[in-house]
Structures are given as C-alpha cells and as structure tokens.
Length: 140
Image 1 (spheres, one colour):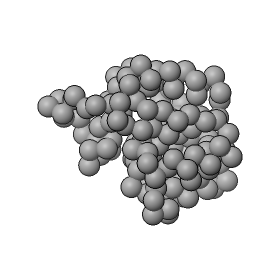
Image 2 (cartoon, one colour):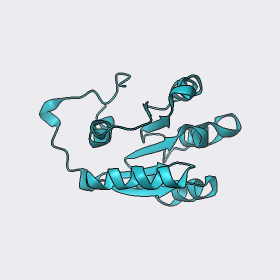
Image 3 (cartoon, helix red, strand yellow):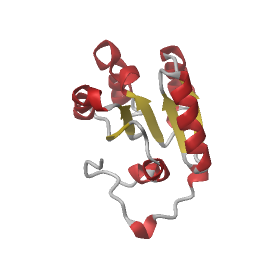
Image 4 (spheres, helix red, strand yellow):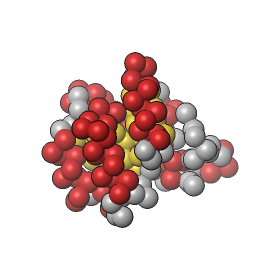
C-alpha cells in the first residue's frame, strides 16, 4: 500500500483524526455513503460527493482546507486524467495527498494515476485499518 510516503510509525499512531479533513469522491452514491460513514466512525471530518460537478465545486471551495483527497479512480482518471491533473497543477491543492480508491480490475489505470502524482491507492473493499490510518499520508 505505501509508496514511501506516509510510512507507518507506531509511535505517532495517536493522531487527532477529528481535525483531519478528507474530501471523499466516489461516483457511486451508495459506496460514497458507506465509506463516509466508516470515516466518520474514526472521527475524520468528511466532505463526500459523487458527481464530477460536485467534485470541482468542493475542490474550489474546500480543497485548500483539506488534508487528504480520497477519490474513486474513474472520477480522477476520466478524460485523460483531467481531474487528477487539475489537482496536481493547482498551487492550492497540489500539496494535498491524493489517494485513489480502486478495484482489483482497475490496477493498471490506478498505477497511471500514481505515476501522475497520486500518493497512494486503496483497493475495495476498504478495510478498517486502512481507513483508520489515512492520516499517516500527511506525514512526509
């Protein structure tokens, strides 16, 4: 899972997740609600949307205040990775770690996303330990 960024350090395993803002983008409303509820259980602040229009709106309004962007691969990589490239080239957003949510059959496109600047990826179904430790991606 880790690509050298956000290395797990058990001594720092006590982050105050209630102060960490996550922008969650998943084009499946049901999946978006499930992941958002799971993140809320770990006390993260979550802004969750599932349409491309809403993604751009929240990136513009809340993006600069976010700590992590957790986004479904199809939203990030559509139209020649337009959204991911937008994030990577926007001075207000490019320092925010982008973590791609993917499935086993989407790994090749996910790897392309990582090569374009995404910090990491998670394969569905997401596990509770992956979600509880998302904050570690902020540790560079």
